[in-house]
Image (cartoon, rainbow, N blue to C red; front, side, top):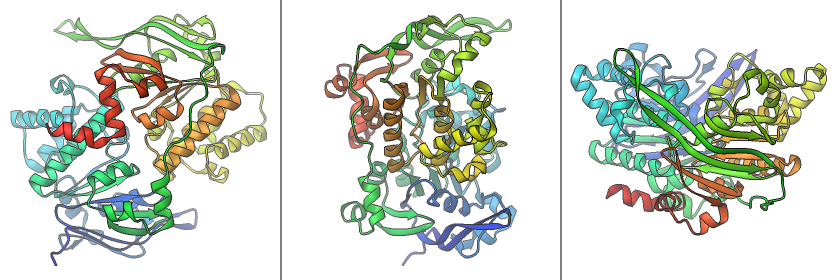
Length: 541
């Protein structure tokens, strides 16, 4: 039998803190053959990412340790490799796509600089050759007009665009093994299909192997060769993908396969008061050129968009990455400047000063797409969730505030006893639940949810959808739900706005649009969301 490219044998990972030791990975073993895609699936906190980070020794040592195990890459044990040996392997032979691109990209360097650094360090590619390769990579991962993006900084890109840059960086030197930790989490379904097709092409052309970590079982079934199912630090089932999906043996595997956001949104009620309304909202970003930096054009991120949202209702904003979804949400919440009329609870707020907006902030809360980037690493979970209470309800005693924090954490499915921990001690899905608790603790009237379930596995997605629906019914909340996951949107939204390149291409009752989409772009999105194979076939054409 041919020796596997990577062999993880009896791996354990322990974390030591405050005199206590916890075992995050417990005697895990798996192999990856050359040219093979192995998927590692399981709920948040199951040990998937910790196992993957162990391969390149990216854990926070010395607080992390390996009580047992070997990680053999081409016969070499990486756990015992020197720093110099690991540097030669990282970014060249083995590369990694991380789950949270905003924290993985350098905020002080342009996109061109960050990709060029990898090409120069490992491939000795500089100048015009490096620039040509960078443009080729950006085109491959679906970044439109890449020449205009070379000088952009990470904060100037959408979440999906940042993730595509991360993928371009990982593929730059054509690695032998690609570790992909939720690589399509932030991507809309059409680009997701393009990225998967690109990765499949690289696998075929270069014999590249992949360790694919994901909570999206639809992707696993269509993309992976073998799957390892993880829970509580152990692999409970492994085998060929079709065998696992058609005849799962373990109860936990059956639980994962049955998990899907279900239920219906609340019935539309035209008698409910309008909470927030935008009329002809425009957000144009100037493009400056020349020595005097004169405005020569505009990026029309949001162009004449009108929306209306009532109490107890959910408005879904869908569209591809860069379509203007998040920009529209930021404009409606007055976090960026815009033109047009924005009314909250009947008052025109578009000309309100920062000071005038402050009392309204407790009623307008946001859950951002990137939970790690929106949570302060220097604050405990208790302090993060309580921060809004300190600002907007200063009369609460410390005990009352702590009780509110505990209740909020319990509502989102987190153990209140964990509130003294810090964000880095939680998985991506757990951090997103903290972000939801922080928004809900003030009992707002309006919540902007920017991809709130994108970092969550399917079973937790279903729990969060149920939670959001329950909170909405209990408090008559209005949700602006921004997402590329149309299955989640279908379970929550009363009305839908489909955006493309800053404009609305279709809007109306969700049930009508899902049943009978009129615009070809909407039809393409729905086909991609509910039948990934349709888009993958189209991507090959």
